Length: 216
Image (cartoon, rainbow, N blue to C red; front, top):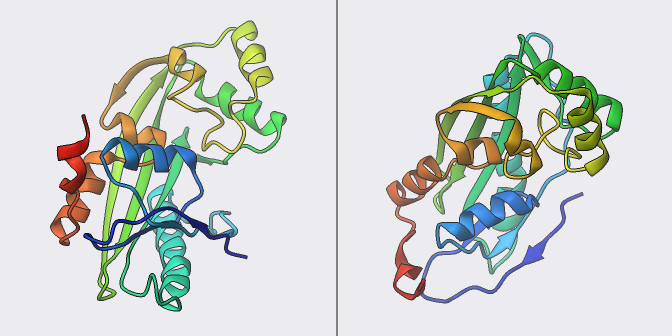
């Protein structure tokens, strides 16, 4: 079932649908001065297919989310010409795709695997234009965690911040204190690489900087 959330829309620009209910992705878009006109998240099974790589999984899920949102948007008069933006983030550590942790044991297993080692974060962006052309970007960031003490692990699990996060952590929150080194896009690890997202929208004619004059 697809949930629909409306936001206010100025009439002087094309409409944009964000195919996500993630408050982090919405906040990142807003940071870039972009306010989507509707949020059309899709519930789907995010289990990797047999033999599917982290990159392939991120691409497949981003495309699937975009397609669900596209079908809904095109059926509505107010969104039939909207741009559709979707993304999916996957964490890879030790050759394993880590889940979006939903229970504490799952988060604990992720964090123990990440402790004291490097891992990779992939985000695939999928943009569908008003003419239904599909454009995609895949972004990779390398992150290294400190070795977590038992107290750090227990306190972080008790915080609940890990819930629903790929790899069982949120870099923009308390887990930012675990990061020793990051190579690549920080916003990619949060969930939406801003440079690549803005470049994609800009390249397809969406006026990404129109609101900047009033940003102060």
